[in-house]
Length: 451
Image (cartoon, rainbow, N blue to C red; front, side):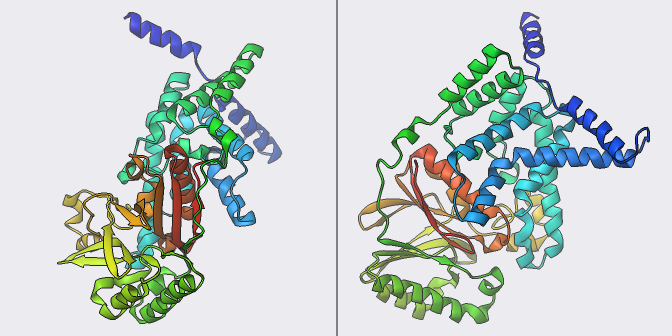
């Protein structure tokens, strides 16, 4: 009883003033502006509420879209000060979101972040499922928000935000609020996020003393390693990270294989002629079972004298297909198979008892590798991540110094997916003190430093 009374008292004393009153006041102003004052229109009301939910959902996703803006308009990353402000705005909106709006806001968050998830179905003759998958994912995130934000008090909102990154619908873990601070001055541990949440709460319920407390908490949430930016820098200038522009339609057209192979071989030869020691081609750069084409396979072995060739391709064992990375080094070859498969791209995240009634769903799926592996390149140990793996926490569990990622982002072109992917890679690079080297198709290749 005493514990229950304590929690009830704490909830009441830590209650957060939501946007509800502001939303209602703005509704009255909108109706006046439209000359509809006094008109009880359910349609107008529903439209207004959906617009509000859409706006709140967008503001929650603001750090992502600020990064998209700078990527598209300036081909650069978000300035750290702006990323810090955008991250705080995201937390502020979540904290003040009315509890009766949480489902609608969650749906729009799902749409703004993951509208692109179903785009891969365009290439397997299931175009009609694209909006269905997008809506399904959005509705699931609506339910997630409905569960984690059921109360307008500090404790519930804090725990909800901390848990959000651990809730993985369909095995998909990209809605990690800490990653919203990847391009900011703030730290990325859960403690840093908790400090930011508490600082925002003190700002919302502000008094002079609480504002000072908020500033102290924000100071404690800073990542002080940024004061040492540039220390421990590594040189990767001897590595070519190829960025190819091959659409998925071309990749899956066997008649275009010769052209694709020719482009890949030219990239390798150009790198070799410019004294590069390593060349990295994207995921599925050779969009077929590489070991079955002995002419190309042997040519890669021959070219690997004097340069290490790393490329993505398919591998087949019996009737199982693997998404693999091949390393050709001085006429020797090794292979790493993908372990963490992308939902809706390489695996359909539905129970088997459902999938068995739809054989085409099973035909879409790849086999999983046995586990994460490192490769040795010029004597240096490098952790390998194929596309989705490079944004998964398990790849970074033992704090690898260098991570090599290869991706084929043609599945989701055009969309914000490559930018969201980069934000998550930066998050893991900073959090685990790892350098991430990324070679991609239909998006930019880059090197991410942990500072």
